[in-house]
Image (cartoon, rainbow, N blue to C red; front, top):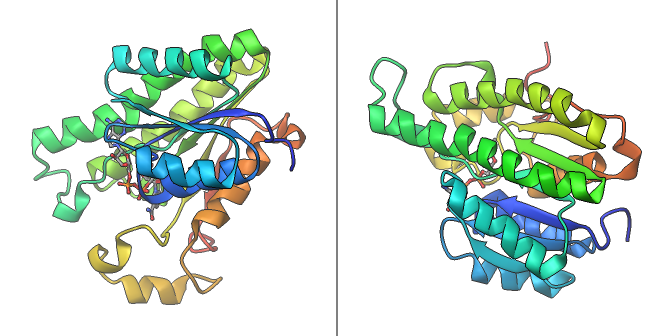
Length: 245
Ligand SMILES: NC(=O)c1ccc[n+]([C@@H]2O[C@H](COP(=O)([O-])OP(=O)(O)OC[C@H]3O[C@@H](n4cnc5c(N)ncnc54)[C@H](O)[C@@H]3O)[C@@H](O)[C@H]2O)c1
């Protein structure tokens, strides 16, 4: 077990997909994980607890500050502190294929509410707990869709990466680092079915495959480690080399 043993980690959007896998991987490295999801995450929590120390589920709507405050209170009540926050919850409604011109306002607002305001709420509520503990690692889960800016999802992730820099500058003096990971196409994309031209994109990935949860987790575990204590404000692209020029 490494630096994560005994750490207390909140992962938002952990009921399914990448968040669920991240919970299992953090737990397997000895962390107590709080799985925060708008839907019931008890099955994912049980799976994570089987691989490591005790984990809990706290049903949370990240867009609602009161709900996020209750998440922090439940974490403190259970584990006494907070070390790591993984802002993973996100909405991706673009399979419905809206651009900017035709994006319905409800899709636009819902995307920004989860992908940006949700991160804001969790950040504002988590930092006082991390200050108290004298240690903090915050990782925002972005996407290489941030590079194109062609829909509400990509634009929200673009803003998230800039927000990461601003957060890093704000809380560095408190020994809290803030970084983002910027995944490309991953096994959980729903990409296969939903992304136009998936096979052509796959052929252009230098490492010849889509990413796995483990690929992303390895980077996050590094960013959470003591060795990464001087790394902050980074947007770490993890895409098998697809975006190299
Ligand atoms: N899957 C990929 O290939 C891929 C690629 C690049 C980036 N990402 C990013 O990785 C993260 C996870 O992606 P995924 O594909 O596993 O997502 P997903 O859609 O499978 O899961 C998202 C989770 O967030 C939860 N959620 C939604 N709204 C919420 C709210 N208001 N409060 C709390 N929880 C809420 C959902 O219930 C769900 O469990 C996202 O930030 C996504 O943008 C994913």
